[in-house]
Amino acid sequence: MEAQQTEPEFLAGYDPRAFDPVAVTVDVVALTLRADRLHVLAVRRGGPPYAGEWALPGGFVQAGRESLDEAAGRELAEETGLDAASLGRVHLEQLGSYGRPDRDPRMHVVSVAYLAFAPGLPDARAGSDAAGADWLPVDAVCSVRQPETASPRPFEQGRRPGAHGGGAGRRPRSSPPDGAPLAFDHGDILADGLERARAKIEYTPLATAFLGESFTISELRTVYETVWGTPLHAGNFHRKVLSVPGFVESTGASDTRPGSRGGPRARLYRAGDATLLHPALLRPDREATVR
Amino acid sequence: MEAQQTEPEFLAGYDPRAFDPVAVTVDVVALTLRADRLHVLAVRRGGPPYAGEWALPGGFVQAGRESLDEAAGRELAEETGLDAASLGRVHLEQLGSYGRPDRDPRMHVVSVAYLAFAPGLPDARAGSDAAGADWLPVDAVCSVRQPETASPRPFEQGRRPGAHGGGAGRRPRSSPPDGAPLAFDHGDILADGLERARAKIEYTPLATAFLGESFTISELRTVYETVWGTPLHAGNFHRKVLSVPGFVESTGASDTRPGSRGGPRARLYRAGDATLLHPALLRPDREATVR
DNA sequence: ACAATAGTGTCTATGAGACAATATTCG
DNA sequence: CGAATATTGTCTCATAGACACTATTGT
Figure 1 (cartoon, protein in one colour):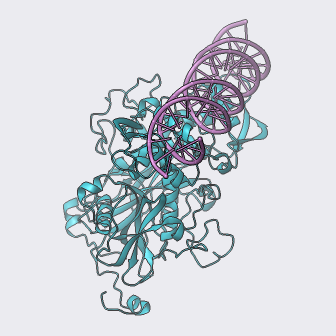
Figure 2 (tube, rainbow over the protein chains, first blue to last red):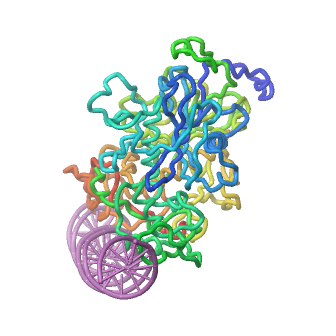
Figure 3 (cartoon, each protein chain N blue to C red):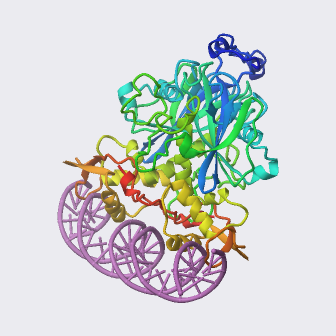
């Protein structure tokens, strides 16, 4: 590589296998609301490592054939059985990459994690190399660290498990007292995804991605209450949502009496054209998190 | 992989080269302030591809030997010549991953980009496989897409004489009309890093990472004005900074007359212990950006 | 009738931003 | 002295949040 040569010459002689391999996967934290609880898509691994355990859906990036975004969309479609049209209603964004050398016992695997917000979807189905797929309540698989205890991390990815992790670690190791842990470091990825989700609905209209084409303000409020884990004041929330330009726009229609216990018929709205909320919705009790 | 076997058996027989290779690199968007202008660390490539062109510092992740964070820190240290102690004052966070199959002509390369905020540093030095390294003014290498595409602003930092503003596309392909482009898709990565930086100093105290151990409120204001490209009201900014708990704390001392043109000696402050600013500092003219 | 919910009105505390005012130091 | 800057004061407006109130529907 030292001798001077033209770029075509160089490329012709380039050997893509001349270095130690690092594998690249995508993993998806797909969130949805079912029965007013936040659920995450998980697969039961069909083979080693971590055979039989729950993990985030994901897989290897097909070298030279797809971008990371495409790979994430593909993995999500495989596990949810959605066609391209339904996938269009799903919000998908990159979450972050995880690359500790020991996070996969097979070899050094760098995982690019994605975060998805999905409206109510049919039951999951197992993908090619999974023994099963299902939507799991997030608080069953991950200690729902309320925002207050979770101090905002200045990005800390390099810790190795096992060494001393037991007691005082800043990030409680993925599997808390309740529920089964996720394979690999997927518990950490899920925790990061949840925190990202909590933050993102503050300043973007993405909470609407958890709902159908049209929705009531109360349904939207339920999204916030579920994701944030905090009850919100119905009246103030209502006024606030309508006051943010571009957040929602009215369809003419009204609710057709779902399973409510009385009350007037709520008006229906659809997502507006804003991509950012201004002013943003504020999570309650942020002062406690400040320092 | 279908036959049932124990995990040790599986691992013993696992061949890390059994798949098409995808390479993993880290690239660093390292920002600093020099003479009240925002600069980015760049290297001149010593060999193909893009030999002789400017690029972000970066390199391949050493398989099995380092995490992504460690690789980013290593690359940054190699190019800046900083020791571990000085590096400790640099803020380094993951920015995002870029993996279009055609972004590197050699093969499919996934790059994990990092964003660094550095205080004034000595001149850069060329790393192992670079022909040179230097701090480049960001507006010379990247069309400074102001956050707003509209709204005339009294203070324009990014215009170079003779250059004309951006065209139409949402993301002008890495090389804009003015300035030398960066190799690969590094222009896109830089643009994303700048936007992240602008957003991050809103709600974190990281603007202090551009300054030394102690600083005046005016110096801090200059950081905001330079990164945001907007003049700020000195009086309101002053009061705001002091009112946010944990943002800055007073050292007893006062400024020792740098190169000012008169005025009282400003008091000196150091970074406080907050990790998030509450309430956040708001960028002016956000309404124009909302939709 | 009663309970539950949708939606609106009102009041208060807080913070952002526009100025203005004062003090300090350099040329 | 005059210009530039640091710091503080004051006023106004927008908004978040507490709370109350009315209207509408199911049981």
